[in-house]
Image 1 (cartoon, one colour):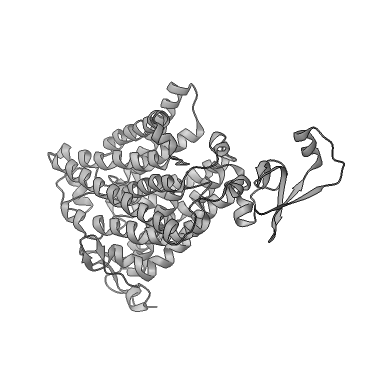
Image 2: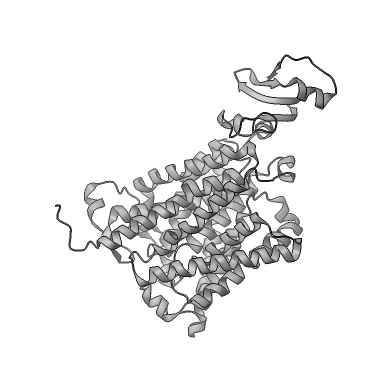
Amino acid sequence: MATQPAWLDTGDNAWQMTAATLVGLQSVPGLMILYAGIVKSKWAINSAFMGFYAFGAVLICWVIWGYKVAFGKHMLPFAGIPGPTLSMEYELTQALLPTSGISANFPMSVMVYFQFVFAAITLVITAGAFLGRMNFLAWVVYVPLWLTFSYCVVAYSIWGGGFLAVLGVIDYSGGYVIHLSSGTAGFVGAWWIGPRLDADREDNRPNNIGSVLIGAGILWLGWNGFNGGDPFAASIDAGVAVLNTNICAAMSMLCWMLCDVAYYGKPSIIGAVNGMICGLVAITPAAGVIAGWSAIAIGLGSGTVPWLSMNIFGKKVPFMRSVDDVLGVFHTHFVAGIVGGCSTGIFATISGSAAFDITNPGGAIAGNGVQVGYQIAGAMFVIGWNVVWTSLIMCFIKYVLRIPLRMSDEQLLIGDYSMHGEEAYVFGEGTAAYVSGPLRGKEIHGAAMGEDQAGIIMGKNPEIEERHTGSGSGSDPIVDEIKRD
C-alpha cells in the first residue's frame, strides 16, 4: 500500500473531488441541456456546444497559465504570476494558496481541478446572453481571453489573496467572482454582438421545457458541491452552506412563482426556473456565514428584486429592451448577485465567519455595518473591470482580428446547420435547418440540404411550396442552388 503523507485527510480529499464533480456536472451536462431546451430548436446544437467548448477550452488554459494567475504567488494586487500546474511534483504537494496562506488537507491536483470547474461555469453562464447569434469562431477566441483578463483577475482579487480579500470583501463561493462577473460580461457582450433576428426575438418559445427542467434539476443539486465545497473540508460549515443553499433556492422559486401569478395570472415553469437560479446565485456569497432565517430572507429578495428587474424594468426601459440578453443573465446573475452580495454584508454572523475561518466580525446584524460598504466596493470593482475588459476583448476580436461577432442574417435564418452542418431534430418542417423566408434575395421555403463552394443547397418540399405559394409543383422534390452574392 502506498504511503500517504501526514497532511492528507482522506475524507476532505474525497469530498473535495465529489464537490468538484458536482460543479462540473452543472456545466456538462446541466447547462448544456438547459440551453438546448430553452432556445428555439434551430439553435439547440449551437447553444449546447458553446458550453461544451468553453468547458474544455477553459481547462487547458487553466492548467497552462490561468490557475496561477488566479491563485498563484503575488505579482500584482489583482493577479498572480502565470505558470503551469502540470508537473508531478506540483500536483502531489499539499494544496496551498500562497498569497493568502490558506492550505487544505488534499493535494494541489484536487485544488486546481476544483477551482477549474468554477472558472468553466462562469464562461458557460456568460454564453447564455449570447445564444442564437454569436459567431462561433468569435466565441472560440473570446473564451481564453476573457478567462485570462477578467475571471482570473477577479478571482485573485477576492479569493487568491488580492486587494479585495485584504479589504475584507466576503464572497463565500462566487456571488461576485462568478455571477456578478458573468452577468456583467453577458450584458455588455450582448450589446457588442447585437441582437438576434427580429423573428427569433418575437417567437422565442423553448423547444423542450422538459429538458429545461432536467438541466435545472442538475443545476440545483450540483450547487451542493458549488457551495458545500468552498470550506475546502468536509466540515460543519460545509453542512451549513448546503442547507442554506437549498433553503434560499426553494424560497426564491416560490416567491418568483407567486409574482408570476399575481402579475400574469398563472405560474410559469420557466419563471420558476429563473427564481430557483436567482436563489442559488444570491445565496452563493453568503452560504456558510449566515443563519437559516437569513437564507429565507435572501430568498425573498432574490425571488422578487430580479423578478421586478426582468419583468418590469427590463421590458419598459428602451435601452434594456435593445440589448438582446437571451436568457436574462443580467437579471438572474448580475441583479441576483448584487442582492446576495449586499445581503452578505447585512446577515453575516460572527460564528459563521469564524467557522469559515475568516476574520470578519460578522455583518450589520452583528454590529459591523461597514461590511455592507466593503461589499458594495467589491461589487463596483467587479462591475467596472468586466465592463472595460469585456468591451476591449470584443473590440479586439471584431476590429483587430476582423472576426465578426455576429453571424450573418443568412446563417441566422437557418440556425445550427449553417454553423455546424448538424441539427438537433430531423423531422421536416419546423426543424433547425428549415427555412421559410428571404435568403440572399430569393424567397425560400424548404430545408437546407448542404453547402458547397457555390452556396447553400436547399431542398424544397412540393407540398410546402404549394402551401406557401398557392401553386402545385408536382410530386418530385425540387432542388434550388442559392448562389453566393
